[in-house]
Length: 320
Ligand code: SF4
Image 1 (cartoon, rainbow, N blue to C red):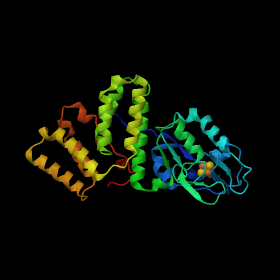
Image 2 (cartoon, rainbow, N blue to C red; image 1 turned 60 degrees about the vertical axis):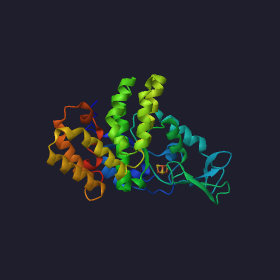
Image 3 (cartoon, rainbow, N blue to C red; image 1 turned 135 degrees about the horizontal axis):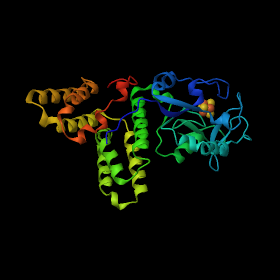
Image 4 (cartoon, helix red, strand yellow; image 1 turned 135 degrees about the vertical axis):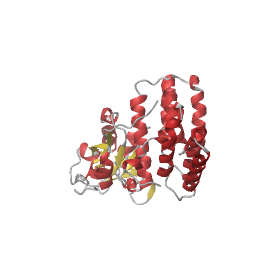
């Protein structure tokens, strides 16, 4: 399986206030240029505002989350307002549309849209007990547990942006290569193509996934595909460390060794070492690996997504 990234834009959901629509409770917006201008180059952004969609107007009384009989979205100043079930039902309602999305960018700290930074208050609204997801985002996560989700503000950081892009590309590739034909052989082919990229994110979790994949007969076809996709998305959600990336690059180098002369081998090894020490960007190593790639007749190394174009090469984040 040679996984290709498509030249056309990938559909990704986004909170409406992040694209500049003045839909916040006070009639303002929180335009994220990183989302609309930078990521808009490769994402077709589809905007949603759950609070407007459930009929709260603009402007509207602000709501917040309180820990009561359960987590509830109530008016900050008027606790008679309770839109808990409305927000969750809206997330269910747009399920068929979310099915077609490959990721979701959500506004941080919002009682509806936050993914991890929304304050959960005590019932009297005074002390913050925890920071976690808003109700719309939490229901999206429940309905689509593998869908890449990220907060708009966090995408200003290059490494988090790169990580989100990697997850969206993987989720999209799975939808194109496996979803319609989830036979174990197909799933294993997908895992194999992602193997070195996964190693760059977590060696122990990738090894555990490898063991699970080799026991594919132990579970039903559907459960096997779902478990593998879940684990792939979980591993990719971890930021790739320099140490793990170096390890994955060395594995790739090992496949090409036999086709390089002594000087070429030494030059490649030196470059990987310089990357490990932080003196060279990963792009330098990838460029050299790709240069030697045609010499290998082995499909395995040609199929590796790690060696395909990176988000950084699309100009969407910086090289590290
Ligand atoms: S955070 Fe979500 S609910 Fe609040 S204004 Fe933005 S899109 Fe609407």
